[in-house]
Image (tube, rainbow, N blue to C red; front, side, top):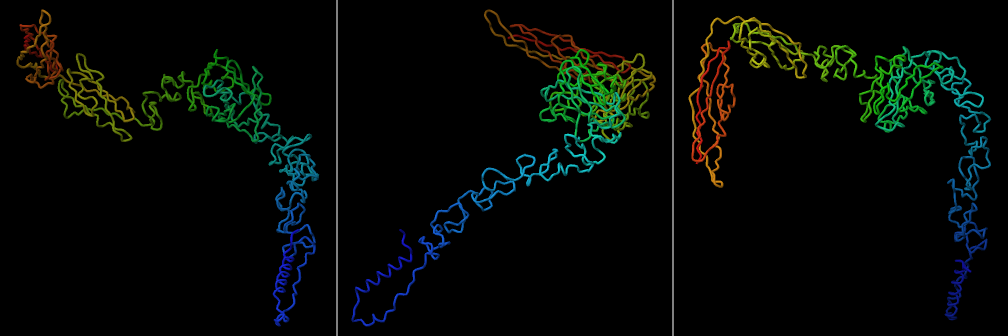
Length: 636
């Protein structure tokens, strides 16, 4: 049994008193004057050994004191100012589950594993009415006696979800739109909520199937198939309710959407089997369809609206329609018609890559012209490099006549320069064999860029031996030309800018008269020359073997040649020996190398080479001279 602090105090007092009695001295008179003990023991009303002073928070209940075990009873059993500590409180409201009661609040208050038990749940979804919200499902979810309240926003009597007996409102923001309303044409609405917009206006050919990729390379068919349609009507059409089908394999799909799917006149629309660019080959899909398979062999596509067949396209595994893996079947844009596109001849393989992958086509854009046709009549197709097969003035090599277009298909938009050929009359005598000074400085580029000149001799009089090669620097602005006979000479000039845009070819005709004087040129081939060479021989077996003598180079100098008329002369050097090689046979001064002459031991071989210089002046009179080169080779 535990002794209370009050009892200990009594015992201690008693012990001290006993000790005092043992030491009592009756002679000590002061002992008679000590006061008497007046201490009172504190009360322990419930007899649990704890008083209020000791910390008993309820001295009328022996089960409650500081060392009592805490029970789950809603009481502070151990007097620590906490109630039911250590016991579960599932809803965290400060009241332990054992004494908590269930409230209708969507929480398990009493920790029994059930939420809002014993409260009404009208729709039986496991959520009590007091916390349940109303769903658009034809059921009274919150038990207030009303069904689908709040889901008829436009108050036309139809909810967004409908019921077993009443269709759903397809547009709960517009009171004029509801099941059974009158369909109003050309307003872009499905007024009667039947899935069609503006039904009753469709006619055959309103939609044209214009491109089909049935066998992609970039991804599998299951992800990459698509086709494209074109609005051939003159109005905006709404695709909601249009049926996609196939008579070959009974495919069937109705185009549906929560909003009107509009397609403006003259626009194209891409329908695909997968609308994720990361999976479908980087394709931008306008509409995702299901239940349609585009066969790689023979198949067809049919578009229907209001029981009217708008268009049908059939392919036959390449027998007549183009059908190559990785390339879309593309309708030539000159045949965007539901009747014309029945002809396989107006279809071709798309040849434009539309992504970073390997497939070809033009999804979302107007089709390219079929590349093998010449659509504009300029004689070139896209296969021939025509970059605009709609414009007869645009093709490779065309003149850049339009500063806003790339007429010559070189990738640059520019404006061609202008060529102005002329000659300097004051300096030109206009006589044969006299200089004719051509002038191109009047040419210009409208963009101020530097231009390149190209002169040509188009025609010359009979008997003339002149050609473009006889124009002194035909790429200069102002070249010089020496006519060789009298008559008409026609020159052309083309100037080109840095972007290779060329001018029109402009011509210039000049009349040349006969020069009244003439003398023949006198050739001078220079002095004779010689060289003596030796070769070392060595004994091999019973015979001597010698190397060829060394190569020797001689200078040929025709500068002594003259012409009294001062004509420009043409030179031609020739050599009589195969051992001789002339560096530049048409130069005034050049070199000749004599090489490979064999040596014989103990003897000398002499090679005599005749060098001839022929010269010709402007009127083709000639002169000639010779010199000799003597080359000796001795084996030692």
